[in-house]
Each structure stands twice: as structure tokens, then as C-alpha cells.
Image (cartoon, rainbow over the protein chains, first blue to last red):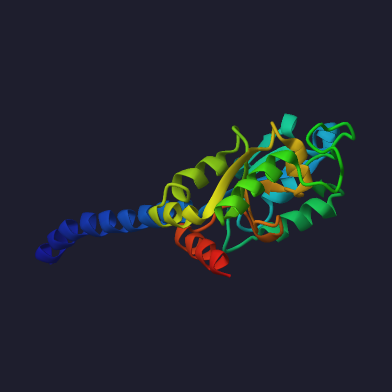
Length: 52
Length: 176
């Protein structure tokens, strides 16, 4: 019992570390996939109320 | 408008939209897999706005005749014709973040640089040449327009593109 608990204490940080690495890689991949474009809208400046 | 656009799937948050009020424009970061430019145009139109640059003043010096090709482009077309090339117009602005990204990823890519050997490449600053942008009905940036040596538009793309796909497109269009 004691052996399995200490084993778990050893494995747990490794599991968490790999999980966090996986999540951060996914997050950065998702961020990298974003495209960017600039769009013109006629008269946007004249109607500031409609912009925000 | 920002509030409505930020609710579209693929944009998700107002942080992804930066407004340039003095240029009647905004830059949006989006997930192309979830939302298309057409979706954004549709949302803009639904709100009662019209995509595009403000109508050109009638005394615009760049266009003396509303049908005539702007002089800047006409000169480039002449160059293209004399060299047996086509013309690529790149509509951009100094403040356009997406345009800088396009320069860094597409126009510095070896396959695109090679493909551009068959093209006269003309960068058009939309602030400096608003009339030219209006003539070609530019509604967003970066906009890339390929013209035949006769001045006919044969291809247009708006926004970010894949460099390999674009170099392939440039090569295919020149062969035709």
C-alpha cells in the first residue's frame, strides 16, 4: 500500500506536467491559426455611436 | 458593430478587434475555420453599413475619367505589357497589421519570390491612393489583385493566404 502511494506521488507530477504541456501546445496552436484582416466600412467614423 | 462582430464564432472576443476610426476601418483576428469574410460582410451589411472605402470625391486627381484606369496602375500595366508580364496589385496601409504579416510570411517566401518574376509588383498605399483603392472596390486589406497586361482582373484575394498556394496560383495564372 505504502509502495503504491509513493509510486503515485512520483507519477502524479509527471502526469500533470505532460498534461499542462499538452494544453499549452494546443492553446498556442489555436492562437497561431488565427488569421487577420482589415476591413473598411463606409462612414464608420461619421457614426461613432454604431461602432462601440 | 464591434459588439456584434465579436459575437461571431471564430472571433469570440472584442480583444480580437481593433478599430481605426480615422480610417473607417478595423482589424479583426479570426479563426478562418469558423468564420469567413463573407460572414463578416453579411454582419456589417445587416447592421446597415457598407463594406468599402468612402466614395471618392469628384475632383479626385488620380481619376480624371470615372471609366479610365488610374494613372498609377496604367503606368504599371504598360511596364507589364512591355515586359510580357502580368500585374500584381497589393493594397495595404502603414497601420495595417495584417498587411505586415502578409509581407513577412508570403512576400518573403522563396516560392512566391520566384513566381513574382513573371509579374510587375505594385504596392498601393490605400491612404495615399484612396482613389485607386476605390476604383478597384477594395473593401479590406491586404487585398491582392492580379491583372492581365490588358488590365483585366483575373484574381483577387483578401486577407491572409498560404504562400505555397499563392505561388502556385501565380504560376498557373501566368501560364494561361
